[in-house]
Length: 122
Length: 469
Image 1 (cartoon, helix red, strand yellow):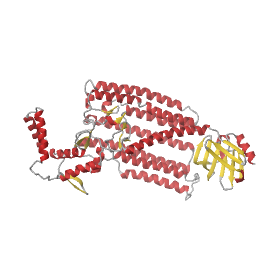
Image 2: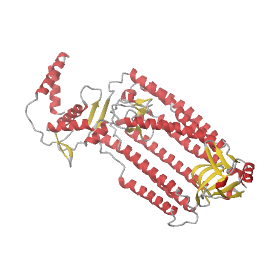
Image 3: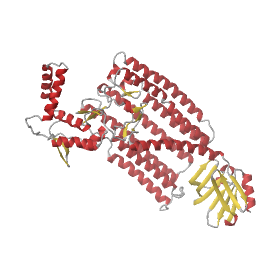
Image 4: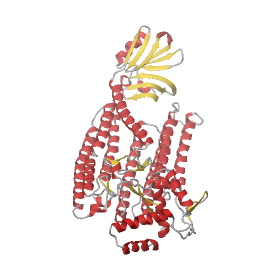
């Protein structure tokens, strides 16, 4: 799975890593039980501080997407807890995206098609 | 054959392959098969109609200019072999090497600037600051195995131990006359070079894996092939270094002559060049094999000053893969990178200064005077002063060549021997001689120090000896 990091983006790098790993899990690029690189290896590959990668992993762990232990490092959780509800932050984000799409003149069907595509993990 | 002629040949043998390797690396004919064009990442937009012709024109112009410069440098290098005098030759060669390597880069720098303008013209700046990492392969691709580097390093160490044992007299070899720990020092230095090669090999093996495709398997295979080629180069250098260490150690013990050492060194340098040429050939082959699968290009061109010096304050890595050439380079924006850069500049300045100093040492005649109850040997900033009442015995010699002289520290030139030497197996002798004058004075002081001194001419030596008598 390829991660794209934009160092000039307003989104912090740890958030970019976290977001892309979540998208990778959702799309099936990252499977349950799959090993993630060590904090040091990923930091070295990206040319960023180990603390940044560590922060991303901690966030993913606290959200229940990955599990970490000393022996095996970080792995994707096989059974990700399905809460069945969307967080307030995500609702707000979705609202913003839909609003921007409407203001840009994108038809509702087009937005729904995209949602269906991403939801289906295609 | 004289030392300066041999030196000229060795330098020619070394510089010509470097120029050719540089040429093939910097100015590839098939730029479409390379990852970068004149230090700018090759992008798919460069292959589009209307642009491909412009890129081809820039690349071929740079190549034509480089052909002229390379041929001119080879001709000049051939002429430099005719220069007489080791110090003058060293000075000219050092200046030439610096100049040739800089001039060789001029078409590259011009081409790089044209490519950057073209990139801006095409509006290819959206991806600035974007980098890619393959999560599946991160930190997993390595080619250098500990077991493969262990054996040559152990063999080298064994050779150091053998020469050390010979130096401390645990066993004696008829052809080997220990001179302090000079043998151990020289062989030890070569062994340490092997250690350095190993460390550098590991650094290179741990460099970031490149992302060229969305397919992780393609990335893995590409990086494995590149790292394997690099690891093989380091292993070849390591074994070559060990073989050279063993052969030189053997020569020290059984068949030491200046010529045998020079021949071994020349063979060593030639093999290094051959190894590098094979590496370049295979590297180009890998690039050609994968060029069609290169679909991802990071836009980090802005961080490569003149397309070759890496300066990226956002990158925390110190080592990155070179954009042109073999191996890695440093990130000059990293604090340690700045320090290394400064050391590098200082070492270049120091090299030039020491070459100038060497020239002064070779061309300034030594002076031997006996006055006011003292024998004074003087040259530049060095001076030996021996008071007459300190002298225990003196002896006049008329054939310096009969002495078995080994330099421990100081200067050893065709027309000057100055510093601490081992003479006929006696360590710690102080020499201040012009060996071309043939005649010398051997002085033993009451403190037990042995001096071998002479003036710049036989007359000067004789005059000082007469006063001493």
